[in-house]
Amino acid sequence: MSDLLRSVSFVLLATRCPSCDRAGPAPCAPCIAQMGPAPEVPVAPGLDDCLALLSYEGPARDVVTHLKYRNARATARWLAEGMARLVPAGALDVVTWAPTTELRRRSRGFDHAELLARQVAARLSLPLASTLRRVPGPPQTGRTLLERRDGPQFLASASLAGRSVLVVDDVVTTGATLASAARTLRAAGADHVVGLAAAHPP
Ligand SMILES: [Zn+2]
Image (cartoon, rainbow, N blue to C red; front, side, top):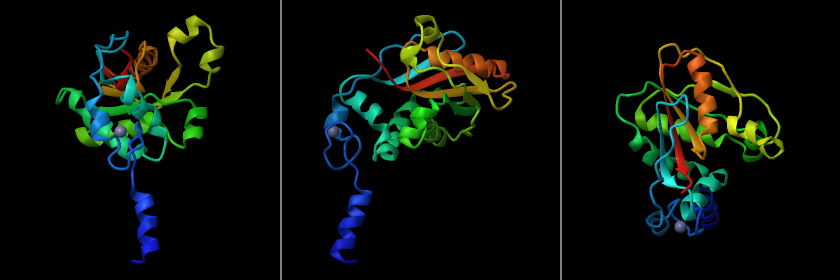
């Protein structure tokens, strides 16, 4: 391989830490050392449990928000490994995600929640199912407090009769998005719904 090809493939394959930009693992060990576990997540109505991996601050915040850049896959794999470890063994039988807005999906080129859900499902050896569609709504900033508290609206795109569902999102704050997703999943027949996020604010 010529030096030029070698350097091109290095650039294509190299990852950088999404927090400090150091070349190497995404995220790097010193940044991981600064991350703390998520504080206890309030269990929003409709959920049987709600779990989160990291406290959404410092390097952890960078890692989750930079999921859209070129390190997305490496970072998602790292997050999903930790997220999957939070899930009690044998309690669930399908993994899904709370879809992001079409606008955000288009600007990132992919749905970050789907990317995380795919990696979590692989680690848990569970099937991944696309079960929710997001109803287009006004941007969060143009919405009333009441509308924001109720979260985005979803439609079910699959029957979930009798299923135990793990629903994944990147960040859980008030739990409004996961609660809204859980309402829709239960209306589609799910009888057990657990929320799982990469991070929760301190
Ligand atoms: Zn770093």
